[in-house]
Every structure is written in structure tokens, then in C-alpha cells.
Length: 306
Image (cartoon, rainbow, N blue to C red; front, side, top):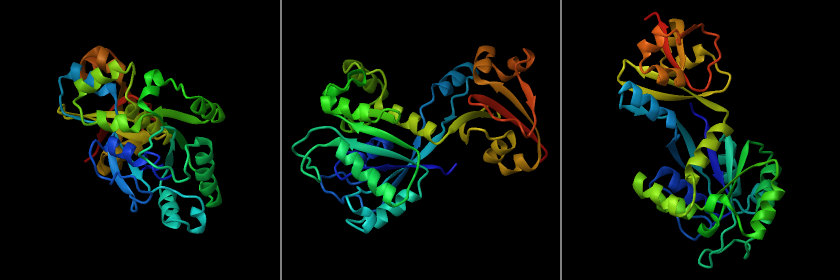
């Protein structure tokens, strides 16, 4: 699955900080300069999925391969990018190659991090980026990511009146609020330390988890699972509406070429049964043909001629 999400925003909006947090390691240069990121940095990021751990627990299989999506950090847009301002033509070309957009909007205040227009004005910043995309005739699914201060984070409550106004102006759009700087710091902690830190901040879920899950949905992806020879559980991203034959081809082209049938059980039915054989005996496993439309959470075993 080669679908990708481009992270865009004005210089110093925090998009490269978000990207580095997603990768859980420093790849892009993060500095207070408008064109620090010139070539797009690409990373494949695991998709959080609690179902994998539950399937692992009941089956006793510990080797897990999660689904993943590709994020691309694209250098900051500037006003006039469609006319070649800054490095505009290159930036817009990179955006065209993506399938969806995370539009990072600066809401946070930090005197040490300059703003390209001298002041924090999220509405104006959004207009600049959207205008450049429109003039370049780029239309893609988009999530607005409001990059806020840490003290605004509790339960995603935004106390800043400016941010509330911005949120209301984006009514009907997909909007997430995160503190990219905090997420980058969290990514360097152990899972246990992360949980404790989030609890202290009264935040229910990592902003990164929300960004990844929402991006996954923005690409219209669902997940099916396979259990390879009882030794590995793997989550596979696939477009909603895809068939069993298309799913088989993702796992291995030979499975699609020699497709006979698909044995399918919902992940919850498998967990409640405990084992694949037990699910069979309880009549939970269905036989489906190549035109079966794969559902999110299906656990599938493909039968095929070798």
C-alpha cells in the first residue's frame, strides 16, 4: 500500500517537529529557519491498533506486524509559492504526489521561534496555504492540525480565544489539536513514562495516536489481519470496499493467482473463541469468494492453488 500523507504548513509552524515525533527519531533538521527542510523527508509509521494485542493475548502469538502509512515532511509553503516564491514550485510538486494532507497551523506562542509574517494569526496562515493550493489546482483530503501550547492541552481544551475562533471557522472540517513539541518529547520516553506523563497532563490519548489514526481514515483505509502459520499476526491496510481477491494479492501474488476461497472471522469472534480452530468449531468462520468485500477487523486465511 503506497498511499502517503503530506505534512504541510508555513515555515516554523511545527510540521517538522510533528514529523520527527511521528518517526520517533530525528530525521528532518528542526531549526528556526524557513527553509530548513528543502527535500521532503519520508517515513513509514506504524498505525496504533489495540486489536493486535488482544489477538496476540488469546492466540499466544507474540510476533506482531502492525499496519503502516507513509508520511512526507514537505518544506514550508510561503505566500506566492504558486508563482515560484521561495521554493514554491518544488514544494507544490511534492504535495501533488501525496494522497492526503496534514495542514499544520501555528497557534502556539514562542518568542524564540519567529513567524514569517511577524505575528501569530492562524486564520491568515490557513488562507495563505489554502490559496496557494487552490491556485496550484491541488485538491486533496485534508486534516487541520492546530499546533498549540502545552498548557492548552488538557482534554484538547483550547482556552485561547483566538484558537476557539479558529476552530469555529473550520466547522465541518477535520480538525485536531496537538502540541508538537510535547509529542516529540514524549516520543523519547518509554511507553510507561508516556502514559504517566499524559495522565499528569490530564490528556486521555497521545496526540500522535490521534494524528496517525485520523490520517489512516482520511486515506479511506481499513485493516484486515492474517495469522501466518500460527507464528505471526499481521495487520494489513487496504482501501475500504476492496475485495478478498485484492486482499489476497496484497499478502502474496500467488494467493491471488491461485485463489480458491477465503476463510473469514471477525477479530472479536476470534478473541471470544480463543483460537482459530475453536472459532471453526463454533461456526464463527465463514467461507467467502473472491468478490467478498473485506470488512474492517476481518481475520482472513486464504486458500489457494500453489
